[in-house]
Length: 220
Image 1 (tube, rainbow, N blue to C red):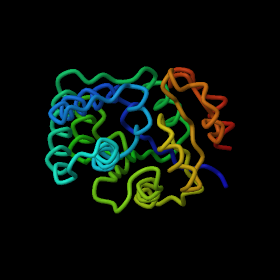
Image 2 (tube, rainbow, N blue to C red):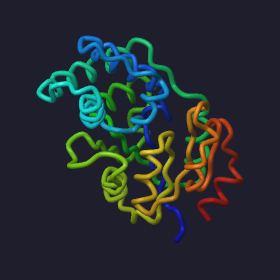
Image 3 (cartoon, one colour):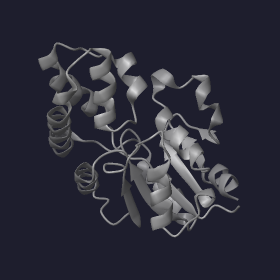
Image 4 (cartoon, rainbow, N blue to C red):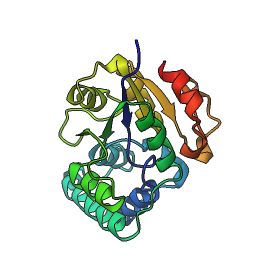
């Protein structure tokens, strides 16, 4: 089926927010005497904050009644950090130009709450760039469940099999493939050579590396 639609993840793909999430999470978890090293933290990249906390609270046997406040604290801290020092990832302008010139519908599907999505789009001056924005904030399940991608496709009037996703996390890649969408991945350099990226249609070291001809081949 011909590709008509491109759907973008946000954190770690469009904006360099993963270090901000890690810093905010660590700041919050310090009160519980918990430290998560970067390599371990990477395993939960792409999860919603609530699911991230559920995982680590279980690992460290922390009372789960603390999760709602911890989730609120982390989200508010990340929004503050994004507004103060958030930076666009390399190659965003390049990939958006290629996708726009391909006459595809463009959407955004993120695990992040809508409050953060709006803050990021304003920070990057990208308000109005996406014809549909979907958040997994209030869904029963976040990525790797495919619902947020499916919801974005529906909002764009597209069938999931007509869509190609751009992702940076393995949980996001799994969500895209579960939705029966094509996927371009831009892994973190520390994880770039892992074999699990092989299920993606294309793996890039940066959005700057995307070439118009190879993208047109992917969507043909």
